[in-house]
Length: 175
Image 1 (cartoon, rainbow, N blue to C red):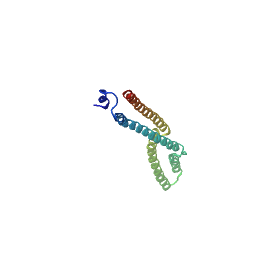
Image 2 (cartoon, one colour; image 1 turned 30 degrees about the vertical axis):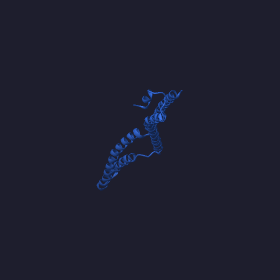
Image 3 (tube, rainbow, N blue to C red; image 1 turned 120 degrees about the vertical axis):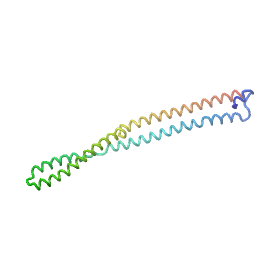
Image 4 (tube, rainbow, N blue to C red; image 1 turned 45 degrees about the vertical axis):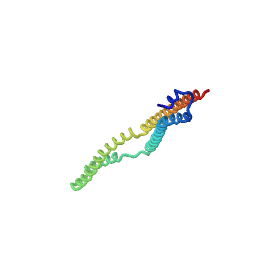
């Protein structure tokens, strides 16, 4: 039987009943108030992380352009083919061809690695680029606003319970 129903039979409040009712109210709301506050703290932490990722993405995007060495390698291989055509002796042609072969193989490896790098960079940009980070910040701001609104609604529910308790105490202590 609860403290309220025990008193329903008699008039007024028993000694110490008001303190028990306040303690019961506080103990029942404590986990919900803490959970709402924890949700706000977590949302604030996520917003801070999202803002930091955005700052890093913006700094990375501001890095100066870095040229692709494959462009120069392609040109060099073309020049090496032309150089073979200009050679006049078999010995010079063989040496130039070995040199060309090494560069062409290096270029081929660079092309394959470049494809993988380009695909990885595009994926990274989609997930961690400036636009993705801005969207993450926007989502984090919305989540924080919702967490704060939830916390306010929990506090409002507690306040309603406290007001109800005050009315109960007033009615039961009135002469």
